[in-house]
Image 1 (tube, each protein chain N blue to C red):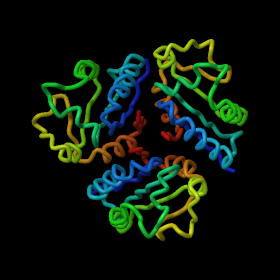
Image 2 (tube, rainbow over the protein chains, first blue to last red; image 1 turned 135 degrees about the horizontal axis):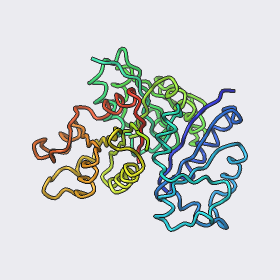
Image 3 (spheres, rainbow over the protein chains, first blue to last red; image 1 turned 120 degrees about the horizontal axis):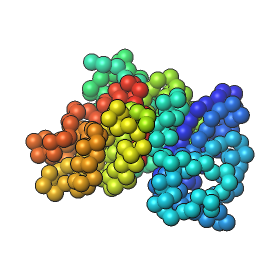
Image 4 (tube, rainbow over the protein chains, first blue to last red; image 1 turned 30 degrees about the vertical axis):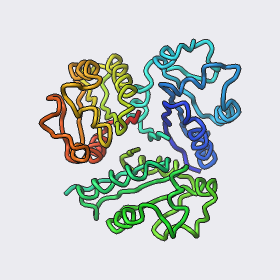
Length: 115
Length: 115
Length: 115
């Protein structure tokens, strides 16, 4: 199976179901151990991480994390949404400016997909 | 006229009109014989191909096919929508995992546009 | 601070607030004098430029222009919206086919972001 480098971008809360289905299908089709699959969320999409205790899509996300998918959240967006970083699930990585991460990854050769 | 390599991504049914206008304008502006212009549809967008007899946008799509535009559909999405492959228009190509095709094309140097 | 090359794509009128917030956050985080940050608008998004006298988001846009951000508008979309080019704000650049500009920039190594 092939390896891929890709960053998925999500900035709308109601796109999580579609995005997670996309990523699940991809994970099944590639060598996920040698792939780099990142989900970068900013703007309203970060609200999904607002309450760790009642994380929506918790099972789907945990399963993807177990398969090496990286979840990255924009700190500017967290600040705008009033979400404290220490309330985030442990598997989440915070980057100061989400769009800068999107640029850096593409510069490194990652494909970009916006579901 | 110049040549281009580009994959357009559509995953919402109500974006077909916008997407087809984008592609029509592009086809007029480039050497389409030496270009590679692909339209990759997944998720709900594949419903446009659900009934060959009453294909929406049939004229627009046929004209683009005649100009070398390639229409590719995600098989996972067809399965999810309950659309049988043998009911698809003949000009459609089916790929097992649409997002993997989006990654592969970008890795090959195709630009990505999500209308 | 680092330099970036990126084109932001907007084709919906109601995405301007989100897009401008994205670009503002980026401008603060990079060396904007040595960066190339472009905002390419087509389809309905060009309506924001339809009335120079009452330009929405005028302050946000002017501030970004002062920081070197380039605003490019698709002429096909202007024609479709019935907006005369000589009514556009002076800082706007017009390109005949917006999607072709999106492709050319990516071919030149620009990242693509669709808020």
